[in-house]
Length: 307
Image (cartoon, rainbow, N blue to C red; front, side, top):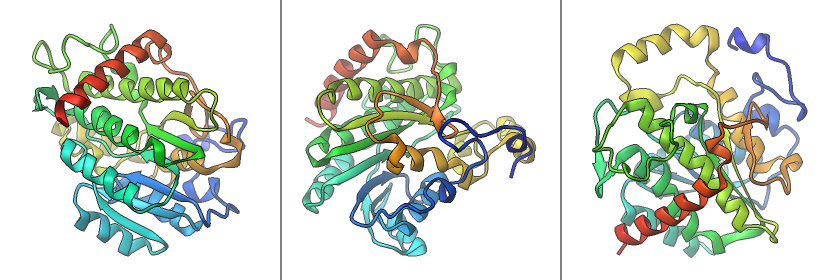
Protein backbone atom coordinates (compact mmCIF):
# COMPACT_ATOMS: atom_id res chain seq x y z
CA UNK A 1 0.00 0.00 0.00
CA UNK A 2 1.35 3.43 -0.90
CA UNK A 3 1.63 6.09 1.80
CA UNK A 4 -0.80 8.26 -0.14
CA UNK A 5 -3.58 5.67 0.10
CA UNK A 6 -3.43 5.97 3.87
CA UNK A 7 -4.63 9.58 3.64
CA UNK A 8 -7.29 9.25 0.93
CA UNK A 9 -10.69 8.16 2.14
CA UNK A 10 -13.44 6.30 0.34
CA UNK A 11 -15.95 8.01 -1.93
CA UNK A 12 -19.73 7.66 -2.37
CA UNK A 13 -19.29 4.23 -3.97
CA UNK A 14 -17.82 2.86 -0.77
CA UNK A 15 -14.45 2.42 -2.46
CA UNK A 16 -11.49 4.71 -2.93
CA UNK A 17 -7.85 5.22 -3.79
CA UNK A 18 -6.62 2.22 -1.83
CA UNK A 19 -9.31 -0.25 -2.96
CA UNK A 20 -8.15 -3.26 -4.95
CA UNK A 21 -9.76 -5.10 -7.84
CA UNK A 22 -10.54 -8.03 -5.56
CA UNK A 23 -12.19 -5.75 -3.01
CA UNK A 24 -14.46 -3.97 -5.52
CA UNK A 25 -15.65 -7.30 -6.95
CA UNK A 26 -15.96 -9.10 -3.61
CA UNK A 27 -19.17 -11.14 -3.47
CA UNK A 28 -20.00 -10.69 -7.17
CA UNK A 29 -20.85 -13.81 -9.17
CA UNK A 30 -19.95 -13.12 -12.80
CA UNK A 31 -20.76 -16.63 -14.00
CA UNK A 32 -22.34 -16.44 -17.44
CA UNK A 33 -20.86 -13.05 -18.29
CA UNK A 34 -18.43 -12.59 -21.16
CA UNK A 35 -15.91 -9.75 -21.10
CA UNK A 36 -13.42 -8.71 -23.78
CA UNK A 37 -10.21 -7.24 -22.36
CA UNK A 38 -7.28 -5.75 -24.27
CA UNK A 39 -3.76 -5.69 -22.87
CA UNK A 40 -4.35 -8.81 -20.79
CA UNK A 41 -0.76 -9.96 -20.43
CA UNK A 42 0.81 -7.43 -18.07
CA UNK A 43 0.19 -4.82 -15.41
CA UNK A 44 -3.36 -3.86 -14.53
CA UNK A 45 -4.65 -5.77 -17.55
CA UNK A 46 -3.31 -9.04 -16.20
CA UNK A 47 -4.73 -8.30 -12.75
CA UNK A 48 -8.10 -7.48 -14.33
CA UNK A 49 -7.98 -10.80 -16.19
CA UNK A 50 -7.14 -12.67 -12.99
CA UNK A 51 -9.82 -11.07 -10.85
CA UNK A 52 -12.69 -11.16 -13.36
CA UNK A 53 -12.01 -14.79 -14.24
CA UNK A 54 -11.77 -15.57 -10.52
CA UNK A 55 -15.27 -14.13 -10.11
CA UNK A 56 -16.59 -16.47 -12.78
CA UNK A 57 -16.55 -14.35 -15.95
CA UNK A 58 -15.48 -15.76 -19.29
CA UNK A 59 -12.73 -13.35 -20.26
CA UNK A 60 -11.73 -13.05 -23.91
CA UNK A 61 -8.18 -11.98 -23.31
CA UNK A 62 -6.40 -10.00 -26.02
CA UNK A 63 -2.69 -9.27 -26.27
CA UNK A 64 -0.36 -8.27 -29.09
CA UNK A 65 0.24 -11.93 -29.92
CA UNK A 66 -1.86 -14.97 -29.20
CA UNK A 67 1.15 -16.53 -27.47
CA UNK A 68 1.26 -13.69 -24.93
CA UNK A 69 -2.47 -13.96 -24.40
CA UNK A 70 -2.27 -17.73 -23.95
CA UNK A 71 0.54 -17.38 -21.41
CA UNK A 72 -1.51 -14.90 -19.37
CA UNK A 73 -4.61 -17.09 -19.53
CA UNK A 74 -2.57 -20.11 -18.46
CA UNK A 75 -1.36 -18.29 -15.37
CA UNK A 76 -4.73 -17.08 -14.11
CA UNK A 77 -6.88 -20.14 -14.76
CA UNK A 78 -10.63 -19.72 -14.99
CA UNK A 79 -12.69 -19.61 -18.17
CA UNK A 80 -10.69 -17.67 -20.73
CA UNK A 81 -10.18 -17.40 -24.49
CA UNK A 82 -6.88 -16.04 -25.81
CA UNK A 83 -6.89 -13.83 -28.92
CA UNK A 84 -4.35 -11.66 -30.71
CA UNK A 85 -4.98 -7.93 -31.10
CA UNK A 86 -2.14 -5.64 -32.13
CA UNK A 87 -3.88 -2.29 -31.82
CA UNK A 88 -1.46 -0.50 -34.12
CA UNK A 89 -2.24 -2.98 -36.92
CA UNK A 90 -5.77 -2.49 -38.31
CA UNK A 91 -5.73 -5.92 -39.96
CA UNK A 92 -4.97 -7.54 -36.60
CA UNK A 93 -7.74 -5.52 -34.91
CA UNK A 94 -10.31 -6.48 -37.55
CA UNK A 95 -9.21 -10.13 -37.35
CA UNK A 96 -9.63 -10.01 -33.57
CA UNK A 97 -13.11 -8.53 -33.89
CA UNK A 98 -14.08 -11.21 -36.40
CA UNK A 99 -12.72 -13.96 -34.14
CA UNK A 100 -14.58 -12.58 -31.11
CA UNK A 101 -17.83 -12.25 -33.06
CA UNK A 102 -17.31 -15.76 -34.40
CA UNK A 103 -17.35 -17.17 -30.87
CA UNK A 104 -21.08 -16.49 -30.84
CA UNK A 105 -21.00 -15.06 -27.33
CA UNK A 106 -22.66 -11.75 -26.51
CA UNK A 107 -20.32 -9.35 -24.74
CA UNK A 108 -21.35 -8.00 -21.35
CA UNK A 109 -18.38 -5.64 -21.36
CA UNK A 110 -15.46 -4.50 -23.46
CA UNK A 111 -12.54 -3.13 -21.45
CA UNK A 112 -10.18 -1.05 -23.60
CA UNK A 113 -7.13 -1.35 -21.35
CA UNK A 114 -4.09 -1.69 -23.61
CA UNK A 115 -1.93 1.25 -24.55
CA UNK A 116 1.51 2.73 -25.10
CA UNK A 117 2.98 5.74 -23.36
CA UNK A 118 5.36 8.65 -23.90
CA UNK A 119 7.39 7.44 -26.88
CA UNK A 120 10.64 9.48 -26.77
CA UNK A 121 10.62 10.20 -30.51
CA UNK A 122 7.84 10.60 -33.05
CA UNK A 123 6.72 7.26 -34.47
CA UNK A 124 3.89 6.81 -36.93
CA UNK A 125 1.58 4.16 -38.31
CA UNK A 126 -0.33 4.80 -41.54
CA UNK A 127 0.86 8.41 -41.31
CA UNK A 128 -0.60 9.02 -37.83
CA UNK A 129 1.23 9.56 -34.54
CA UNK A 130 1.61 6.12 -32.97
CA UNK A 131 0.16 6.80 -29.50
CA UNK A 132 -2.99 8.35 -30.97
CA UNK A 133 -3.26 5.54 -33.49
CA UNK A 134 -2.70 2.72 -30.99
CA UNK A 135 -4.49 4.03 -27.92
CA UNK A 136 -7.47 5.55 -29.70
CA UNK A 137 -7.88 4.44 -33.33
CA UNK A 138 -7.08 0.79 -32.56
CA UNK A 139 -9.72 0.66 -29.85
CA UNK A 140 -12.16 2.69 -31.97
CA UNK A 141 -11.94 0.08 -34.75
CA UNK A 142 -12.24 -2.81 -32.28
CA UNK A 143 -15.24 -1.47 -30.37
CA UNK A 144 -17.20 -0.19 -33.36
CA UNK A 145 -16.67 -3.55 -35.07
CA UNK A 146 -18.24 -5.33 -32.09
CA UNK A 147 -21.19 -3.09 -31.20
CA UNK A 148 -23.63 -5.71 -32.48
CA UNK A 149 -22.08 -8.25 -30.13
CA UNK A 150 -22.84 -6.24 -26.99
CA UNK A 151 -25.66 -7.41 -24.77
CA UNK A 152 -28.66 -5.12 -24.30
CA UNK A 153 -27.01 -3.65 -21.21
CA UNK A 154 -23.40 -4.14 -22.31
CA UNK A 155 -20.74 -1.80 -20.99
CA UNK A 156 -17.85 -0.24 -22.89
CA UNK A 157 -15.07 0.77 -20.50
CA UNK A 158 -12.27 2.92 -21.91
CA UNK A 159 -9.12 3.28 -19.82
CA UNK A 160 -7.96 6.87 -20.14
CA UNK A 161 -5.66 8.72 -17.74
CA UNK A 162 -5.34 11.86 -15.69
CA UNK A 163 -2.58 12.54 -18.22
CA UNK A 164 -5.33 13.82 -20.53
CA UNK A 165 -4.74 17.10 -18.67
CA UNK A 166 -1.42 17.28 -20.53
CA UNK A 167 -3.04 17.27 -23.96
CA UNK A 168 -2.30 20.29 -26.21
CA UNK A 169 -4.00 23.56 -25.13
CA UNK A 170 -6.52 23.29 -27.96
CA UNK A 171 -7.36 19.68 -27.14
CA UNK A 172 -7.26 17.29 -30.10
CA UNK A 173 -4.93 18.69 -32.76
CA UNK A 174 -6.97 17.71 -35.77
CA UNK A 175 -4.45 19.45 -38.05
CA UNK A 176 -1.53 17.54 -36.51
CA UNK A 177 -2.65 13.94 -36.03
CA UNK A 178 0.54 12.92 -37.83
CA UNK A 179 2.67 14.61 -35.17
CA UNK A 180 4.82 16.16 -37.85
CA UNK A 181 3.90 19.76 -36.98
CA UNK A 182 5.13 19.33 -33.44
CA UNK A 183 5.66 16.39 -31.10
CA UNK A 184 6.30 15.93 -27.40
CA UNK A 185 6.11 12.51 -25.72
CA UNK A 186 3.66 13.46 -22.98
CA UNK A 187 1.70 15.93 -25.09
CA UNK A 188 0.98 13.20 -27.61
CA UNK A 189 0.17 10.72 -24.85
CA UNK A 190 -2.17 13.26 -23.24
CA UNK A 191 -3.92 13.79 -26.58
CA UNK A 192 -4.46 10.04 -26.97
CA UNK A 193 -5.92 9.83 -23.47
CA UNK A 194 -8.20 12.81 -24.15
CA UNK A 195 -9.32 10.98 -27.29
CA UNK A 196 -10.20 7.97 -25.10
CA UNK A 197 -12.52 10.13 -22.98
CA UNK A 198 -14.14 11.82 -25.96
CA UNK A 199 -14.68 8.45 -27.67
CA UNK A 200 -16.47 7.08 -24.60
CA UNK A 201 -18.57 10.24 -24.29
CA UNK A 202 -19.67 10.22 -27.91
CA UNK A 203 -20.37 6.48 -27.78
CA UNK A 204 -22.52 7.05 -24.69
CA UNK A 205 -24.45 9.66 -26.65
CA UNK A 206 -25.00 7.19 -29.48
CA UNK A 207 -26.18 4.58 -26.96
CA UNK A 208 -28.97 6.85 -25.72
CA UNK A 209 -32.30 5.04 -25.75
CA UNK A 210 -30.63 1.66 -25.25
CA UNK A 211 -29.42 -0.05 -22.12
CA UNK A 212 -25.82 0.03 -23.32
CA UNK A 213 -23.32 2.28 -21.59
CA UNK A 214 -19.88 3.77 -22.20
CA UNK A 215 -17.59 5.31 -19.60
CA UNK A 216 -13.93 6.27 -19.28
CA UNK A 217 -11.59 6.25 -16.31
CA UNK A 218 -8.26 7.14 -14.77
CA UNK A 219 -6.76 4.00 -13.19
CA UNK A 220 -4.25 5.95 -11.12
CA UNK A 221 -0.53 6.35 -11.51
CA UNK A 222 0.87 2.84 -11.36
CA UNK A 223 4.38 1.47 -11.69
CA UNK A 224 3.94 -0.96 -14.61
CA UNK A 225 5.74 -1.59 -17.89
CA UNK A 226 3.43 0.92 -19.60
CA UNK A 227 6.24 3.38 -19.04
CA UNK A 228 8.85 1.20 -20.71
CA UNK A 229 9.27 3.71 -23.56
CA UNK A 230 9.61 6.74 -21.31
CA UNK A 231 12.92 8.65 -21.14
CA UNK A 232 15.29 7.20 -18.55
CA UNK A 233 15.09 10.25 -16.29
CA UNK A 234 11.30 9.96 -16.12
CA UNK A 235 11.50 6.24 -15.32
CA UNK A 236 13.99 6.99 -12.53
CA UNK A 237 11.67 9.61 -11.05
CA UNK A 238 8.81 7.13 -11.08
CA UNK A 239 10.96 4.51 -9.36
CA UNK A 240 11.69 6.94 -6.52
CA UNK A 241 7.99 7.81 -6.24
CA UNK A 242 6.76 4.21 -6.07
CA UNK A 243 6.65 3.80 -2.28
CA UNK A 244 5.10 7.25 -1.79
CA UNK A 245 2.43 8.05 -4.37
CA UNK A 246 2.03 5.25 -6.88
CA UNK A 247 -0.74 2.71 -6.72
CA UNK A 248 -0.05 -0.99 -6.62
CA UNK A 249 -1.19 -3.06 -9.59
CA UNK A 250 -4.19 -4.50 -7.64
CA UNK A 251 -5.22 -0.94 -6.74
CA UNK A 252 -4.67 0.22 -10.32
CA UNK A 253 -6.98 -2.47 -11.70
CA UNK A 254 -9.78 -1.62 -9.29
CA UNK A 255 -11.52 1.20 -11.15
CA UNK A 256 -11.84 -0.60 -14.48
CA UNK A 257 -13.17 -3.70 -12.74
CA UNK A 258 -15.63 -1.56 -10.79
CA UNK A 259 -16.91 0.26 -13.86
CA UNK A 260 -17.12 -2.94 -15.92
CA UNK A 261 -19.08 -5.17 -13.54
CA UNK A 262 -20.31 -3.52 -10.35
CA UNK A 263 -24.10 -3.27 -9.95
CA UNK A 264 -23.80 0.36 -8.78
CA UNK A 265 -22.62 1.35 -12.27
CA UNK A 266 -25.60 -0.27 -14.02
CA UNK A 267 -27.12 2.32 -16.35
CA UNK A 268 -24.44 4.93 -15.60
CA UNK A 269 -23.05 6.29 -18.87
CA UNK A 270 -20.96 9.10 -20.30
CA UNK A 271 -19.02 9.50 -17.05
CA UNK A 272 -15.35 9.64 -16.10
CA UNK A 273 -14.20 7.67 -13.05
CA UNK A 274 -11.18 7.77 -10.77
CA UNK A 275 -10.61 5.77 -7.59
CA UNK A 276 -13.88 3.89 -8.25
CA UNK A 277 -15.98 7.06 -8.10
CA UNK A 278 -17.26 9.55 -10.64
CA UNK A 279 -14.71 12.28 -11.22
CA UNK A 280 -14.04 15.30 -13.43
CA UNK A 281 -12.14 15.84 -16.66
CA UNK A 282 -10.71 19.00 -18.17
CA UNK A 283 -13.08 21.22 -20.15
CA UNK A 284 -11.90 19.48 -23.31
CA UNK A 285 -13.03 16.16 -21.85
CA UNK A 286 -16.56 17.60 -21.66
CA UNK A 287 -16.52 19.18 -25.14
CA UNK A 288 -19.37 17.57 -27.06
CA UNK A 289 -18.47 19.27 -30.34
CA UNK A 290 -14.89 18.03 -30.09
CA UNK A 291 -16.14 14.51 -29.31
CA UNK A 292 -18.42 14.54 -32.37
CA UNK A 293 -15.61 15.87 -34.58
CA UNK A 294 -13.22 13.20 -33.28
CA UNK A 295 -15.77 10.46 -34.02
CA UNK A 296 -16.14 11.71 -37.59
CA UNK A 297 -12.36 11.92 -38.04
CA UNK A 298 -11.92 8.44 -36.51
CA UNK A 299 -14.48 6.93 -38.88
CA UNK A 300 -12.59 8.38 -41.82
CA UNK A 301 -9.25 7.12 -40.54
CA UNK A 302 -10.69 3.67 -39.80
CA UNK A 303 -12.15 3.43 -43.30
CA UNK A 304 -8.87 4.57 -44.81
CA UNK A 305 -6.62 2.11 -42.94
CA UNK A 306 -8.93 -0.93 -43.25
CA UNK A 307 -9.72 -0.51 -46.94
